[in-house]
Image 1 (cartoon, rainbow, N blue to C red):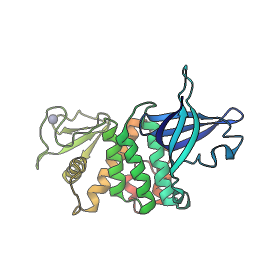
Image 2 (image 1 turned 180 degrees about the vertical axis):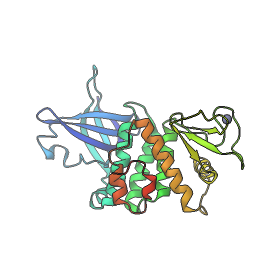
Image 3 (image 1 turned 120 degrees about the vertical axis):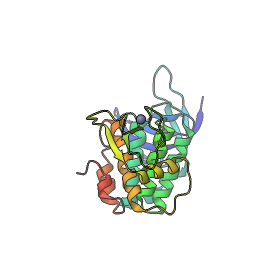
Amino acid sequence: MEQRTQGILLKTNDVGEADQVVNVFSLDHGRMVFRARGAKRSKRRFAGLLESFSHHEIVFQPGRGGRWPILLRLEPIEMHTTLRGDLGAFSAASYAVELFLKLTKEGDANPRLFQLLSTFLTYSTQQPLSPKGLCRFHLRILTDLGFQPNWNHCMECGRLFGKESFFHFDLAQGGLLCQTCLPPQSRTTRPLRIATQRLLSQLQKQQSLNSLAVRPWNDALLLLNLRTDHLLHGPPQSRNFLYQMNASLPQDSNPHPS
Ligand SMILES: [Zn+2]
């Protein structure tokens, strides 16, 4: 029996002599892996639609007995062809796709994440990536995956972030620690300035943030990059390319420059 869902293509690999395996982030089932029969042998089989970043109505036959579902047809909604002609936008889209491939689990439905990816791809075709845009994307993906940092309290003693207190962000646990609760010689904590804490807290509550200086955005981006690297046990492969292709991203917010 045929089923349908909307999905964005993340990656395609060859398998066997004639087929391809297609990774998709879908609206209804989260990340899915399909077998596309004959797609390697004949590009016409899917009419050239098996392109990364493209958004489709997907028609498939569910997998049985642990097998991959079979991709039957793609009905294109948005091909995002402009992403392939602009290196800045292409690097942003590649980075987003790598994070989706590595941070999401197969079969974990998450319509908010689907919406985030769709919006980010469209955004990337319309304007150059800014520290602000990348911060928002990182914080949303972490939040929607359930790694929701609390930017207002010490996660040990519950103390509120105040004017005089100096806080630290724990990359391993994804929360704040006050000076008193900071373990000695901790390797996974980074100091957090008040302006950055305030920005991240407001960003998470989706408050409007138009009058902020550049520095807190750069610091916030560095922190979110480090937190992501901790979750992935290393930096995403496409990050250096992203920074090389987007001059507006501050180099010192890339924790692992090439
Ligand atoms: Zn504390």
